[in-house]
Image 1 (tube, rainbow, N blue to C red):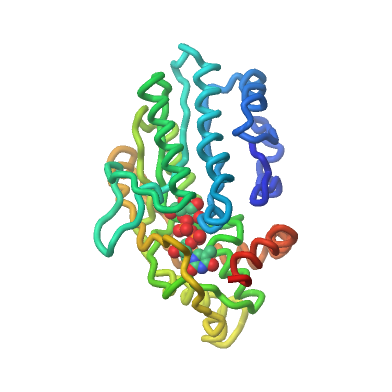
Image 2: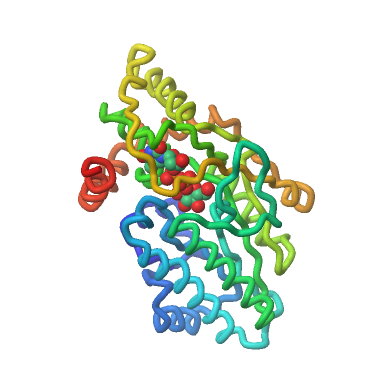
Length: 318
Ligand code: DAU
């Protein structure tokens, strides 16, 4: 079930289009009637809840869209489970996919663990924190079987080019300025999206009810170092003299409330379920760059129309 808003795209699901256990339903999780209708039609025994407005910069312009999708949407889904499952809770599961941003911002030391107090600082992270609280409230109050995971920054194929890595790849390809916020000193912990999905699969099948699990890459990068690495990879792939793409780097006004550093301690997941990240970062970035260079049509389609408007508002009118 997906509302197919600006970042949703059925082309991303082409690989599984004909799978016998796959059905697509267009719908908004914040719409109670539509959600109830789908519960009645399919008698779900599990919900894997990925749906969210996810871009911090957009949440600064339009916070209420985030409250609606992330807070209301999650509450509607939880409530549909409560109403539809009633007391028949054996073998049922509500799995909530969340983010490390709920923990706020780290200084130069320390890692987020599952016990780190919540301290969200953007409308996006506040909306995800609120959704996490609703999930635990339904567990404690109604005994709904829930599990959640909080993951660090993802990268890989099909990533919407509003996010740092695909945006930079696309701009380098088109010789456009590379907008680095502030001084580029902020640090993120990057994880290959397929390692995230593998973790979700494991936790979904073998995680403990009522628990949360942190997922992270053990892979911290300063933004500016990451952008410089991408420039080097792109110079190689595009046969440009070394140093060409880095000339496009442009420092721009910082993101308001910009969290300095995220870093995840994923020891619980490793100890309980044996998960560790599988892919070396530089290799993962090369694969990602190759995917974007081989899928120019996809990039061109998703960056036409509404994307242009967003880009102008975010980068050209500041
Ligand atoms: O940590 C998990 C989170 O990672 C997810 O919950 C979010 O949905 C996801 O968007 C991501 O949040 P970030 O804000 O860290 O990702 P983003 O790609 O927007 O930015 C990564 C870093 O790069 C951040 O420090 C801001 C900086 N940045 C970003 C953009 C888009 C720039 O310097 N320039 C840019 O143009």
